Image (cartoon, rainbow, N blue to C red; front, top):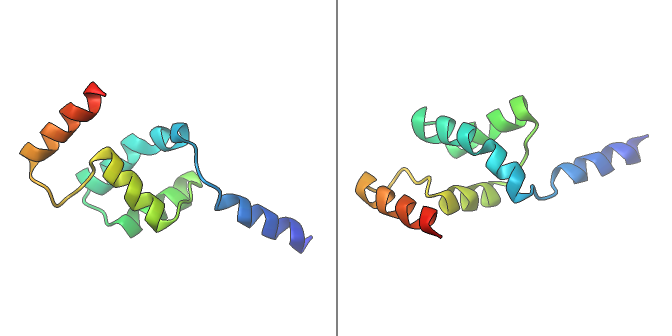
Length: 87
């Protein structure tokens, strides 16, 4: 019985598909940017409420890919978003 549990736990660490990330994107944007939660708080919410578990490194890379950075000026963000939608 314990071997099935560990297999399941290992499975949780598997990568999420780009579609799965996109499915969580609006929620992540609301929590992380609109509600100003930390990466850790956002990850914990996704894990507890959506059973969406991702490593911190991957999570931060995904935030960067989406341009969800709290430390850059909004004018730069607008430019980044405009560029990313053109691709």
